Length: 104
Image (cartoon, rainbow, N blue to C red; front, side):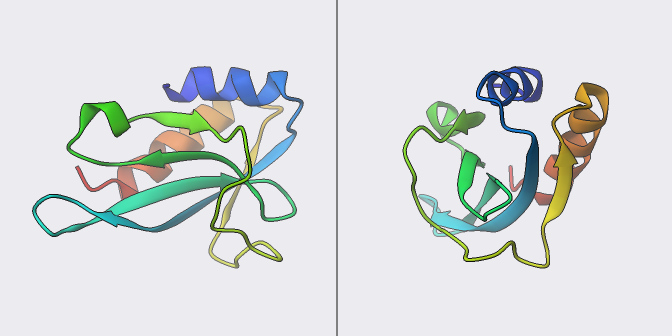
């Protein structure tokens, strides 16, 4: 899903804040590591993820329905806060962060 759909779905779930966090994802077919971008809630639990991969089926954001790792006991200091009360600010922030961290 795109950033605007992600924003709407997170708001429907009544999430109020999100923190952007990037980690190294799985290795692709060429042996190169991919980037896994996560949105975390204030307790460090994953609420959405996006993996950049050459496979079109894996592209785009997905809201995390069931808790999956990685988990953090507290938010990593490298996270970027995003306000889910401001759609324009969220979309702009996410677009800028995606452009920095995506592999493909």
